[in-house]
Image (cartoon, rainbow, N blue to C red):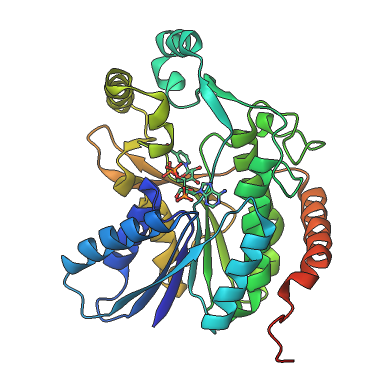
Length: 343
Ligand SMILES: NC(=O)c1ccc[n+]([C@@H]2O[C@H](COP(=O)([O-])OP(=O)(O)OC[C@H]3O[C@@H](n4cnc5c(N)ncnc54)[C@H](OP(=O)(O)O)[C@@H]3O)[C@@H](O)[C@H]2O)c1
């Protein structure tokens, strides 16, 4: 039996990671899928969708579910999720760090029109017109996007290491095309001064992978860096109406036809690289110093596009995360006391 955790399972990409994992695992293999969300209703919804998909596959393996109501901007919630997993499983085989958020405040429509008219492909590949709030902190007092997208998941992995080791786990980070070096100031790792904290957090994911994967290798845990290209995401729908949504989809297809390899558009295609890397046979293990992206040809045929990225400040980042992890270990140590001791 295999155990897989997909954070943010109900997102477009999260669901498609689950679908493709089910397609790629041997048909006789039992799987427990740990789905996560911040709300129970979304957990229920996504379990129903995954069950429906599974029932159409020719699989003899049993699919069962576990759920975690976890908020990655809340360290107590993360600790609770870690405890649940440690209590229930002796080994975990796959972890997909997919959940992510930004602190968006809308769209600069004039900027959007200018960017798309000046360079349509660039305008829908590396947009700068999504307005993000600056200096937003979580209730834990950390940069909110930093905690949600990078530190929270890092802490989650670190505390699960013994059971990841037992499962010879593949840890797959979902990064982004947009994690460019210019978005991360090494003196503002919590991204509190940044007006592009989402992009900065993805750059930090890239660097954190490079800073940590060798240590994980020593424990038999293989960590990989992937990204899904560009696809329709539910998180931005609230800023769009039917016309702007259709306009966005139209421009996405134009970008693909004009040669952009990254406009996967469909969440299923976007899940191609992360799943391919996760299920690769041990004898074919790909290199860990590459970022693997889901890509498509002009005709929409999927493939994996590899990218070599430039990295810097790895020692500094590793030290920063380890120190913060130890600080949180200390802060959280009284949270796991058994208060139900009979008097
Ligand atoms: N869309 C794109 O074109 C694109 C491009 C590059 C990279 N990506 C990456 O692909 C991944 C999935 O993107 P998507 O567009 O499919 O997702 P999405 O629609 O934005 O959904 C975000 C997911 O993350 C979860 N989430 C958000 N904040 C969370 C928090 N604080 N704690 C716990 N869970 C949280 C949400 O769960 P609940 O709301 O249920 O709690 C939801 O499942 C993300 O890592 C994203 O950065 C997307």
